[in-house]
Image (tube, rainbow, N blue to C red):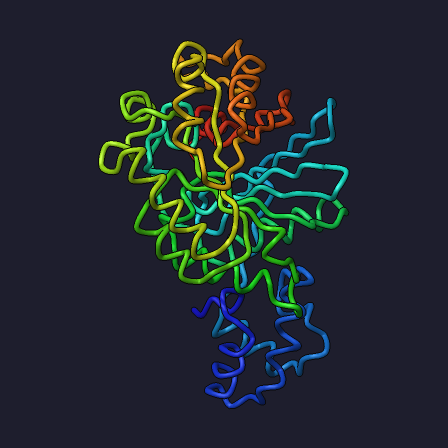
Length: 342
């Protein structure tokens, strides 16, 4: 079965011609897909014979809402989507003054092993398809009834570990006949796969690259982020500097504040020295507690911020959203896995 929702309009036109259908039908089908059509029968401006052919030859499998939680504190909505094979992934709708942002997953589970993240506890099951990534944006928008203006690839999974799929997703979501979300409204978060960061730089996309740094020294970072053991902080930051030189896009460094682990004054000073001279933004993240992890939120967020700012580093503290609804990566999926097999 052909996954037509993962196709560009041009690819769809070629495939239709191979089926003996006129290429102009591709644009019609593409628009129906991005309206959220859940079946080919809904595509009423297509001939019935073509709809039947599409049903026989291609795949259209929108996700089902397995669970949905809405925060009473700030209106954040957490979705647990059940995919066609029974796997589940999460996405989160966050409301800001500048627009609505959806944080989406790119894999079922994750193999990166970060100590502070619930997504990685059961490991990686599989990569998502471009269609499965798109559907998180599309059906979040349809179910919530609010337009999505920004996308964050920071849910379950490591985007650069599913590189080709993510690049196709970016192409599709940017299409003017589809969701038409511009690259400057998209953020991609990575734990620091240096070869893939170099590869991404060659595309010179205008998205925001967010690097999950979480520690400025190798001893600490290797302890909480296994990916660092093969790379090291210095090499990662060299790669980030190359990325900026190639794209001209300032990098955002994510830093989860963990009590007694990465929140000391000397670590703030070292972080400032390592980032000196490179356009950078540090985003301090109050840690969301994960039941299976001994790590706890830092009590020194304000002091750490002040220390960095004293060195001239641009710093923000991420607004904590959805604290009452398991809004952190992997928490809702993990809870569901404990209660029943997914």
